[in-house]
View 1 (cartoon, rainbow, N blue to C red):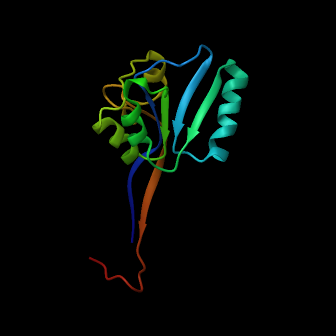
View 2 (view 1 turned 45 degrees about the vertical axis):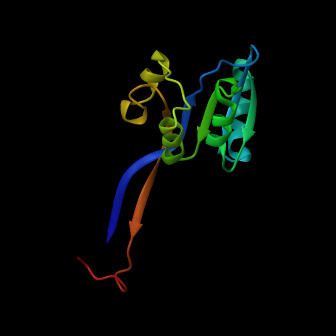
Length: 137
């Protein structure tokens, strides 16, 4: 028996309350692994000329943002799943972003209704059960 569950956000971008600390730079806090994100960021810098400053973390970004408060240098948080982005939203650590470009390019089901996050990808969740070990029903 196979069941496919609803897709969830794999990467979400969320605007933070503060503007970039320097013109031509963007500060990113990320739960993504550096080797996965760096090629994308390098291509972004090559195309736009905007430098990316990234803090890579395995955990604790919500706590860091709470400590930094309105003085946080973070412009964007990139996370790996919807539960981490929901934590930021529930703790009111993210600002609303109203962007015609984002709304035009990202389907409504992949963004927060108030612009608190935008999902760039989804991940399918599958459940499998062994016919030999699991009874139907």
